[in-house]
Amino acid sequence: MNAVDRISKAFQSAEEIPIDDSSKMILMSDVHRGDGSWADDFSGNENLYFAALTHYYKEQYTYIELGDGDELWKYKNMSDIVPVHKDTFSLLQKFYNEGRVYFIYGNHDMVKSNDHFVQKCFNRYYDAEEKRHVPLFENVKFREGLVLRYKDSDRKILLIHGHQGSMLDYTFWGLRRFLVRYVWKKLELFGFKDPTSTAKNYHKKDSIEQNLTEWVNQEKHMLIAGHTHRPMFPDAGKPLYFNDGSCVHPRSITGIEIAEGNITLVKWNVKTKDDGTLYIGREVLAGPRDLKEYL
Image (cartoon, rainbow, N blue to C red; front, side, top):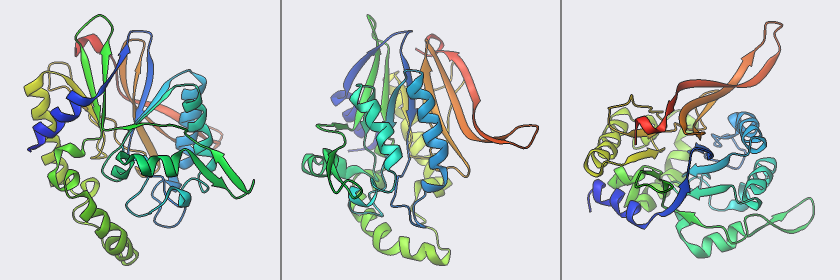
């Protein structure tokens, strides 16, 4: 099965979510929530992420996570991750309890495609402070893809992680997980970088983006992914491949907003006021553009 076929498979099996010009959604990916140790790429940006999600929660957005939300290559269990980032998971739980969150799995959390793992790790977790198991995301469902469909039309937007564009990341993810967990994680202490990492290999990014774009050109549907950590926001008339970036950029996180019929690429980072006060703010990187220009 080639890359286009893998993407088509995700498209054909994806649940459709009806949207219209009143819908408000924030798409983020590659959060890589970890255990709080030196190897946790998320820890440095957790305050940015929490501030951004607090904003979107208050503004009644639906949060859609496009894969690699949790770093389950470096770490085996959610019990290593949830307690460390308890405030973050409590906020995500608020979205979940109000029916305003969808989770897609990626290659780093492909294990979420296993129902037994999900039931074991996400229904409840052990709260050391309360000394008991407490609910987290009871009966949560993780998906390979989602389709946003404008009501009363055939206009569709495919949401996937994007690892479908790479055979290495899609088919041999188990081998790659083993190497990251037991080899590269340790070598990073000495400054060595994983040469197979999509986020750190520009040739691999280009190859995956070419495959995702090929699917867009063939199927004539808009596609939004993550995986490469490289934000993409094409001009109207160009292939409709978008990328929300990641939440592990140095000192910033990025995402794609779909709100009131528009699409916008945004960044959240620490900013400075004239008096030297630091604050976390939102910055528009591209857009807003009317979705009708693309669909």
